[in-house]
Length: 385
Ligand SMILES: *Cc1c(COP(=O)(O)O)cnc(C)c1O
Picture 1 (spheres, rainbow, N blue to C red):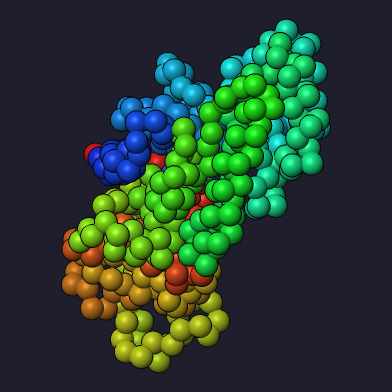
Picture 2: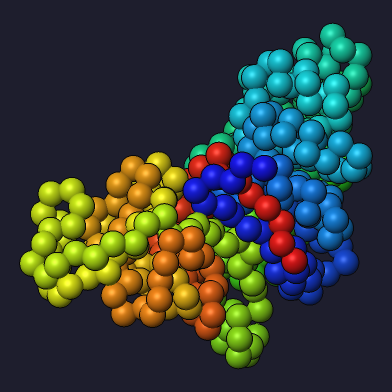
């Protein structure tokens, strides 16, 4: 098998640990749905989904039809539940109905299209009605309710309303407390009213990772958990708040991703020489340099030029000079015996040290979410224990 210049490892035991932690926070009423949009937050849908199924996670949320397709192909023999939360065109709606995939409906044009397509197919569409509760992004508003209820009631052959859903406008930031708690109240009021008007009692769901941690009263029938299952806190403040409340002394989550490469070449440069393109780095001493085959084309941000670091032989080596398209140079002068072929950890543990995505992304001014999802899908992913 041909290996690329770097590889991403996904730890099954770390994932199991995170799933158990998430489940420990939920009552029996609330199901855990794994959000795997953005190529499973960069972990790779094809790698992540089979592993998730093996540890018993069979409920998934994706953004679009292409992700749902990849998910289904990745676990052909599993009976899974899939919700598409975002983009769908007309053929995507037909495909979803055909394959019994649930999907969000957030406006009248999608609702009407769904009714028309379902009627033509003589099948029922399983829909999640999204309600606008204060984020002002998507969802039906109160002024839409009359028409919405009338359409739902008159199309029970075409529509099965599986759930009412909403999304919070930044539950990971305590500064949004007022806005989010008002959304929680709105969602409670709105769904109560809509249950009366429609004569139905579909499931309710609202919470992402941060809301699940911070607002147990918004767990409802299911939670849509993304970042937390991968072992990351939605924000430092959510972590600190949870740590104080739960009094844990070590992080209950484990990062499941590691990103590794190998030293491609080793060389020595005299004191007073510029390294790499232009004048970004001037050696202050005779420097031993290791060349690593990752660069901005493989998701290693250019802003880590002269600031990033990697682990080699259990020690930190600083990136010197500019991040190139496919390579970085690191200073290994003070690491004993580095040679071509040595393992390089870009994200993850080696020896007693760890480079977390959080510290990595702080350096490059990206949040975990963004950094992870920008890891190219072309890097090979494997499962480890
Ligand atoms: C991404 C997303 C989630 C999950 O968010 P996390 O913060 O990663 O848990 C939940 N709901 C919706 C609608 C989303 O788009």
